Image (cartoon, rainbow, N blue to C red; front, side, top):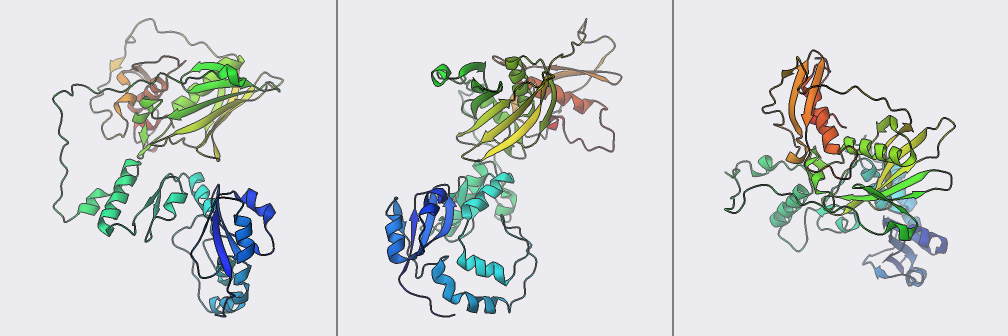
Length: 429
């Protein structure tokens, strides 16, 4: 390749792309966008250092100013070499990248900015919550929440790799330990018990606190929602923050190794929103995406209700955010005129036969908090269930109660033999 001009520089600055881009000059390019406030400047040394001085910065040890206009002298020669190669369709998908590349792709790769932050956000939108960095050190892991480096330059490889697997395991990622220890003679053993340990204890959270009225909001009195504010157009926005620390009973709702907010909880939030605005019927509610609760920290939630239409109906939507990206998890319609069902006159119902629930929850990932189905009876095509929850304070319909009631579908003939129904514990999603 042709010689590149000397005198370039690359500097990492603590600033957003929106802060930097309006200030770029002819001698400075954005070489990388690594995070919401992590940008790398590249180009002519004097111009780069002058612009970087506006923010907290760190000069990078590099031989040339990569991903800048100072790469232009070598692009034609690089393109000529790249065009001599044969390209095949990728077998492993890369975040935000095409499944087939060509010579121009690699030319852009040399010249354009590296948009690492965009790739991470694309993966998050696809449901990825943990990232494993496969490389000689942990440079990129620090740039992505949930990043785990497989190797660390300062540590022995075996120790570093085992530490990485352990960190992924405690984050809820399924690790194939049997494959890891195959041939070593290792085996599973029970953890020792303690003389003073007599029963399982789950701490109870006191609920969300704070004076919402001081911020122009009203209190909701609901365990999952902290405050509500009425909008000028007649709509309402409810806000809250969910975490395993403030709502420890959610830790039992595990699906495929991840703790999810139950679909029943989304129904309860829609019911609560309807109560607040005078709608006693959830006409429709579509669950669009799972809401994953992180092992540490929390998730901000917003429940929005639109202004009433001419027919009195209102739209309702549930969003969550960890950082700056919001995801919609459910949407529906609230109305009025909820039907009133006929009550049972005796329990268990006359003519119903009891169902044996022995081993009903075996093989499920659910914790004991979500194993609320206590008894069930069948009478023809009807199924009657008895469910329980320890503390339903503050809820209109506790999510565990609704989730557990749906478990009774597992003892019914609701699904035909041609339909796969793996377990009653999955009906709320």
